[in-house]
Figure 1 (cartoon, chains in turn brown, green):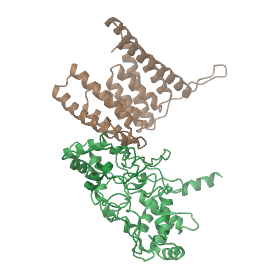
Figure 2 (tube, one colour; figure 1 turned 90 degrees about the vertical axis):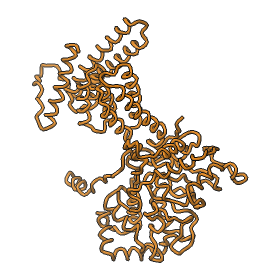
Figure 3 (cartoon, one colour; figure 1 turned 135 degrees about the vertical axis):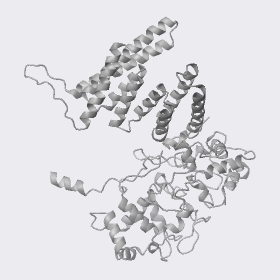
Length: 231
Length: 327
């Protein structure tokens, strides 16, 4: 992890702790006094919104660079594109952290702090941010899905399964999204187990196969407003 | 003004808390009859109250018996005066999610609207309340427990004991009859991979698969076509001609193993007969009858029919079968 990245992650982690205290009854620090001669102080809500929107743009850039990397013709070009993606995710992390510092209950910003951290490989920090987002809004299912992917990054298979089942019950499209991520994770771990043995991957793949079948078969149960049969 | 507003807010009953199984979102409820615990409790009492009927010996529960998944086990229901009705008694299991009511497309889009038919119908008589409305309300008002129930269910009403409130209360109770703790639900929602037998899993694959395409009509969380979900506009119901001389509502299949006999006129005594019918539907259809285009022609191999039956039996919520819980 680069020093700059470590700094941003540390700030985001500190923010989680700070607002946990604030939510417990602690007073929020007051802002600087504004004299008549100073330019208008941008309200925190507006700052948060601006930073959040900037963060979304950075995420988009990062994804574009990742797409470039995927179709790069040489390893050097791929590495260059991935480096740019990393920088864009770092920038996004700073921006979402700024958004959350100005609006501590901005669930979306916390979700993206988790998202950016996850894409930077900082899974523990990512989980911390998702946990915080879900403490603010337990029904923010996008964070449940992202947290499921973070669990996969940490090889926490049982937690990932739980995330999948929570989504299957309450947010079927997101459970389908996590299922795809799980299938990709299995393919990746077949190449590099990262501490897992083959039997663990086999067992998970078996579970995944059954759940994929159930998901296909019962696709029409969830919404109740579409006629579908699985192929 | 502020004080009046606060007082009005304070008088509001607490929001109803659905106790729903996993995977089941809150159903759509008519704005004019919001759910309340007090209404549901009163509705349950009235649902079983034989004073509603012309003979004093018949109630909603006479056709919708809890022990038969809220059906009556007859091919065609029988009214209070003993006359056979036109149709098989439909199950009330998960009726809160229904988008239409009754076998035929009579335009009933709510339980409240539909309930007037069994209450007031005279040809044939079902409950037989017509002409006895005032007498019934007097009788109910003279019953302290019922009177208190109406007062609690409709606080602030100048006239709590009314036919409109009676219908609303019964509808409220019926909406609480959500049954979805079957082994099928345990398999798909609780991730209990041993809940379903291998045969039931094979039957499930047949049911939802393209060869039989049962889920072309029996989809949605109640396996009855579109479901009425809170916050979503009401979808159009499905009526289909499945070789029974007419277009009838697609019934829900939850607890289906407990609701024999089957079809709108109860012509089939068991699930095997229903599957036989669908397997030979082209061969057996009446001259000139236009079958629903969603129906498939198929042949079931040895064992497949039993697999399907095993799957259909897995849809029974045996946790609550035979009971009439509020939740």
